[in-house]
Length: 361
Ligand code: DNO
Image (cartoon, rainbow, N blue to C red; front, side, top):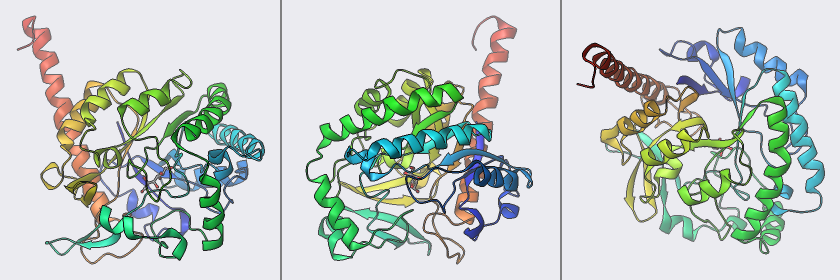
């Protein structure tokens, strides 16, 4: 497993100089942020990003994300141009040495929370989701300018989008996703880039919009759209873990054995009710997800890909991009690295015992 950290480019208050000082840190997860959604990312821009990261002794290991234009998700005739652009961006990224691309297929909104500064008893703050609050929010009343999103819409644009999505139910969204995947995976295969879809966050429908990348059954349906190792997953423990019915270690073993986990997001959340949760410190004791079991499952599949600590709390008075401060994510990275070292050494011990005594002790 390769430890990595998300970096939002030059405008990120956390510098690469700081990130490289986190013990065990190897990779950077980033993107080009100044190209409009749907347009081609030029080789020049990508290469400049690669060079900047390499000059700090780090590696640009994952692109998160190349956003998918809404016309593709809606299945509009104009999708053809955006799909061609997407294919070209994949080729351009590959030509600069990028091996993994993360993306999502959530209509309109990416990750959604009801609070970005939920106070915790220890004085820190976290992102939280309360069903009752979200159900009362009306995206069309301009109440949804959550700064956590990678993209924000004007109310007029939202009205048009909501109108267009009226005819897109889950099955239609599957059809639109299938069309897109069948067009991009052959290109990914050709240039040897692994595509990693991010699960829907939270993994259920919000504001009446369909969401389909939510559980084992749907992830299985997804990987079978094109049965190729290049058509894989970004396994996000926090997103999938918001549903108590998702057995995360079992899912990691299942999809990992099929060589479909290309990227890991390790985030802990504490489920506080039916479709209510708070994001917690990464350590198992603080959330509903047993991080030891996650790392153990990753060890069982010999996971060699990139992993990043996902969303951190705001601690020690830090302010910044919600979920993406330095301190708590750095603690998370070191904790995950510690679990990995312990699990791997234990495995090696077993293996040595096997060799020495002719059987597992
Ligand atoms: C949230 C992130 C997501 C993720 C996209 C991937 O913090 O995990 O915004 O980057 O969904 O496309």
